[in-house]
Image (cartoon, rainbow, N blue to C red; front, side, top):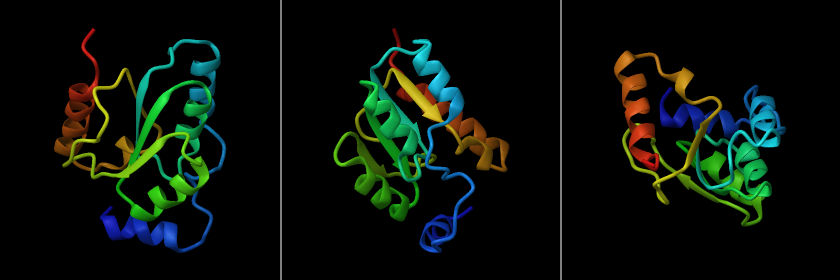
Length: 132
């Protein structure tokens, strides 16, 4: 999906199926079980920031990125400064604030139709993770 389509989705005012307003249940389970320790975190495809804000509320230092400037605007308004949001085309640009200890993606990877896009996404994630 091209950039304008994502912006159009957010501008429509229609309820968006991926923007539920509640954190991802599997993310909640991982955090509450302490499977992932708080640290520098990147959320790819953050949308309006629900998951990033949840992580920030649990002591994660979060940068959320999305290709849609409108989604990022909404995320910043919801977050009240508890985490950082930037408009980034993750396949082509490097997000600020790396390297990261944890990268979370709830709904970005599956939007890619081409094998080369999925491979580039995986390489970009790997390049941003701290090598410990």
